[in-house]
Every structure is written in structure tokens, then in C-alpha cells.
Length: 259
Image (cartoon, rainbow, N blue to C red; front, top):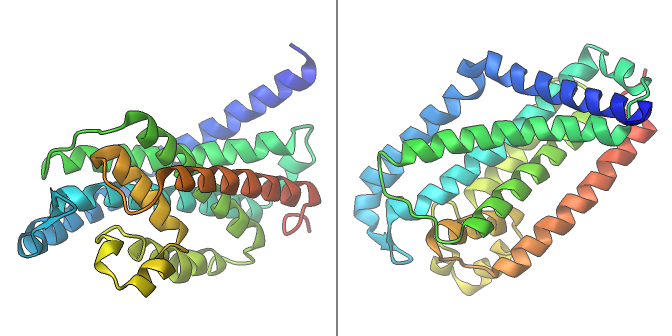
């Protein structure tokens, strides 16, 4: 193994280990709150409101919304982990030391993204286990389920990285989640099928990328979807590639990271 390869491998392991240790060390702030929030969703929307709504898509309302709620937790935590961690490194100016080191920008990016993906998956697993106390889930297509959740976590980890690069203060890292991410998630078919909407709004909803992610994941779990799974996965692959190239270029340019 060459010196450069060994250096990058050690750096990748170090970044990922630090990121995982970071969110595990403060688990009452990173893992517990989303679990409690999802339980409230299960009780209020699934049990109380769901009884009045009845079946949706051939499933009970609780069964129908569980995949969307799992995906919601993966999205918010993947995004939140990277944006807070990388901006924290910028704020403490420790990122400058990493950027002048002989570590490849690809390794730096992959390390932070893997940290976000692992936190998103950890919360997703916790929410899935909690959902078992409220309903029964049977995976319809394991391959689609795994691919979709990994791509979704990766995309939002990369988006969190972009947000962290351009953020100038701590208020900037909350603007996108509050005014963009939350509306897109709630309007992304988590709590309803777009088939309930008028034709015009069904067409408008198709422009929401979260809708494609939620429905693809729902197809993997339940076998039902409002959109084309092939189109959704292709979109996610393209989005991942585009965002990855953008993030690497931002790292190479040093924009927003060097004094």
C-alpha cells in the first residue's frame, strides 16, 4: 500500500470514527428526540386520526404512513448531521488544517457524508423498531428498500454539506431545514397519496423530489407507489452524482472555508 493511499485510508477512518462518536456521545440530542417525535406521529396520526381516515392504498392508515415517517427521519438526520458537523469545523477553524493536509478532497467529503448516512440509518432503524409496536411491516422488495434509503441519506448528507459551506453563521444552517426541507417533506406524500389531489396538484407534486424518495421507499416496504420507481431511482442516482461533483469542487476551491 502506497504512502498516499495509506494516508487517505487513515484519514477516512478517522473522520468517520469522529463523526459516529460525535452523534453517539450526545445521543440524547441526536437519537432520542427523533424517536420521541416519531412515536407521537404514530400515536396522533396513525392511531387517533388514522381511525377516522380508514384505509389508504389498500392498507391501514398506520401502515401507509410508517414508510414515509421512517424516510422523514432519515432525511432530517442525514442532513442535520453533516450541516452541523461541517459548519462546526468551519466555525472552530479546524477544517483549515484538514484542507492543507495531504488528504484528498474526496476523502474529506466521503468521511463527512458517511457520518451523515450512518446517523440517518441509525435513526431510521430506531424508528422502524418503534413502528413495530404500532403496526406490522413486511418488506415487499428488499433491494429497492436498501437502495432508496442509502441514496436518500447520501443526497441529503451532500445537501447538508453544501449548506454548511455557504453558511456564515449558525442561523444560516437552520434556514434551509425550516423553510425548504420541512415543507418539501410534509408535502412529499408522507401522510397522503397524491391520488387524492386534483390532477393539477398531482402534476405539481411530481416536482417535489422528496415525493419520489418517499414513494420509492413505500414501494419497497408495501409494494404500492404513486410514481414510477425506475424514474425515481434514476433521478436519485443523477442527483447524487451532481451533488458529489459540486461538493468536491467547493472543497477544492476552498470557498467559504479559508480566511
